[in-house]
Length: 378
Image (cartoon, rainbow, N blue to C red; front, side):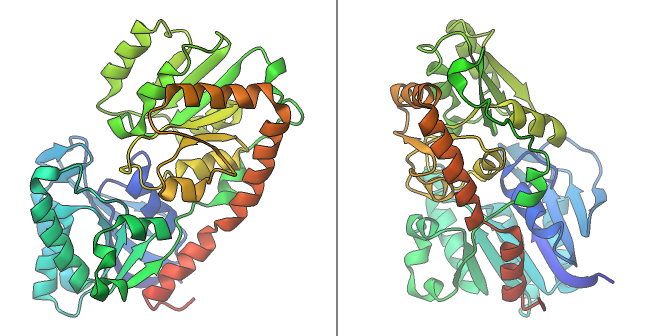
């Protein structure tokens, strides 16, 4: 019998939302072994609250009155957290999320026994510069009342200004983010000795992620200009930059070589990963704080070309595992692709390093670490 853990996870977006924080919450809780409730606000327009089951996750998705990218304002979501605060022993807050944090703080006032656990995903002060003083004050309060603050890597602690404050340091726990590697590997079909790209009729490049500025897709697309026509590039994901990227593809006459595939099913995504030869991860700012999709690419033994952000991106795929380029450097990206195609030993060396690198990550270790801080029996 699955026990009720009395954990409320605030996943920001719905659990089936493409990547990011919801994917982290789903990876953590779908095989958690305890019943967990998830509240989120809808990024897309819905009229009624959705209540559904994901494995042992009881999910509520609330309609939003206003949306700002991946942030939203939903009064029903806000009031539901406050109204039901005594139904839960733990609230697991994903940060940054100022709207959810406000609801959690009010809930804490009504229920001082409520335990708050914060997982830090990224710093946003530079992105929202005009309201950064307000955000900092709110962050300071939420971190002060939190029982534990979880960071994915030492570099995330280094990037977080709040982590340098002494009373917060005592609450910090490092738990590396992971995916269910064994599950994903089940979809991988070995390519045998056919990986020598120089002998292939076409080279398939792939990226996965939202079409937003910090992903750096514009630089990856431009890197194809100096590559032969047998280099093809697929990008999986939706986002506000779609039209701009479509225009760029047209201007560069790359319509036959670069495809924006939009959101696709998990099965279709795995098929694209199987067909790919190289995975591009060209992000340009620290808003890209981790890049978990790199682990998915590693499960399919794809050499990764990423950028030097000196954060969680390079923790997941360090320079000895990936080919790490300078940020916004089109020539670096082009040369990185060429080096993998023209040098079979380099390609195979990267594949070998990827296999060893995956051993650093375990979804079981991540789940047990969270159970431990929640004081749930292992």
